[in-house]
Length: 248
Image 1 (spheres, helix red, strand yellow):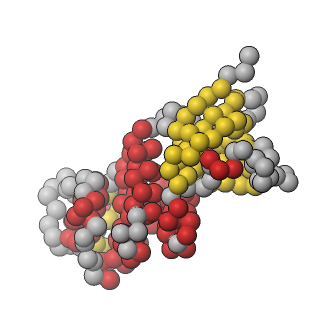
Image 2 (cartoon, one colour):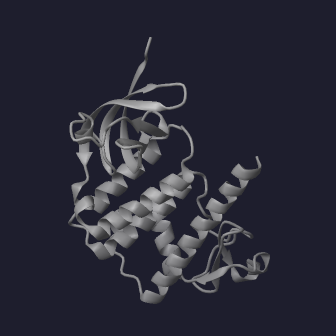
Image 3 (spheres, helix red, strand yellow):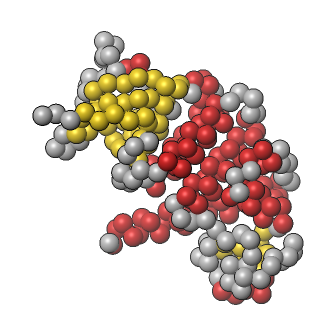
């Protein structure tokens, strides 16, 4: 007897195969990441076409075969259509999708991750949020996503000596996993010097204070450093995970 599974899911990736088929990568509320095969969905007569696409939230029905999940029915819940119409917003949403694709490798249900993805796409889709502020939307997502995976950096005190941070002479270390004082910087030669504005922003992001984050105006130098440490930390954590998957 065939078992049908139903779930709410957010689509973050699609890839075409054969003449008319397609694979969708989704984060499902009840399953975590799953990859679903949609047979003949690229044909204009397909009844599945209207209910699923990249950056859609949909109700999905599928069956589990021996080697793959096959889509049997779809119903659109939310179409983030502003994203598809605006190249800048689509680029930001795609950057989020790349992060998801890099880190989410198997089925693991997580309601907080599902909530974060949905909230992030809603922000990107919101025309009231100006394109220049999409920078903060992406990094707000990135740091909170890494935190949900267990990689939240130490930002309340020095990651080594645990002493209270001063506004001056502070650094960020990927290796140690957070902010360090100058006295402890000898523990990692790869540190990056930061300032109190960056510490404040990181704390607001990890505390999920979007209302304040969205109103921040950063100096270009601080913004450049924040971008550097954010991308570097992301790459560092990803390399650790990739290495572990390769050897264990």
